Image (cartoon, rainbow, N blue to C red; front, side, top):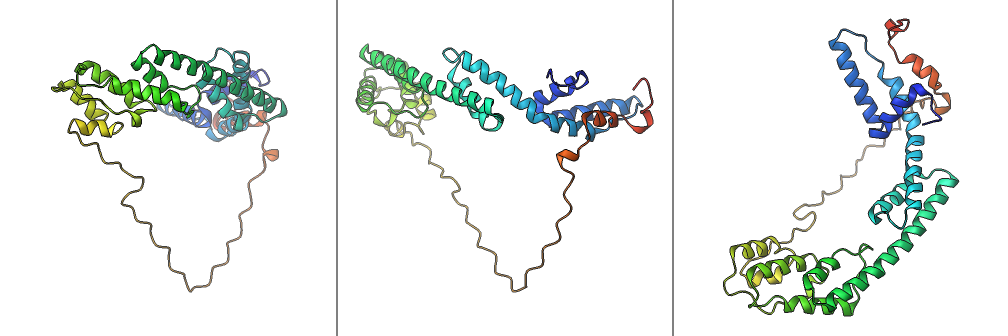
Length: 286
């Protein structure tokens, strides 16, 4: 922003907020207001062209600000926020310094994720040992490293504890609470209930029906049929390939002359000069 002329700061702010489409929309809104007041309209294309020219540099600078902040706070910032900055590096890290910063951020993210994962496993093991089954189930559904599987022995202990919490003697409210935690845990397919309440409450039946797609075997114990799994693209037939045409292929049309390269684009000063309409070019008020 400091490298841009002061006159372009408002345009740069608009680009950072919503990109080139936001600039186009802002100019169109201004022109609608100008037309209603009988004022001349602003030329859209020069401003859009300038916005397109500055957008890559602005986005890269914005990413670098976020990346530097993430590196300095790598131990405190939420892992999801760090991952979002790393994901954006592919398009935003355009020079050697930015790519080096991206590599530093990836290494810091990996180390932080490993550390958080070890702490998560330790906390989960302690929670299972303390008999806090619902807490352990909910904790198991939020691993710091997405997709990281539970150790086999820990998963077996958690499934066993969950199964022991789903008995005929448990109240309907407690049953619904445990079921909700089971449904979103990675061990839900390993949980085998030891019994169901003889007279389940309406609230429990509603919960079972709601979670039937995630715990189908448990739903069947209550006489609730889980919804059928809808496969992707089911019922769609692949159209046959078009028949080969006996007609000889038509020669390709000559390629139109490509537009001027970015090197031939007018300077920023020229673009700004073109922005007002010709009728008000000499107007001091414009």
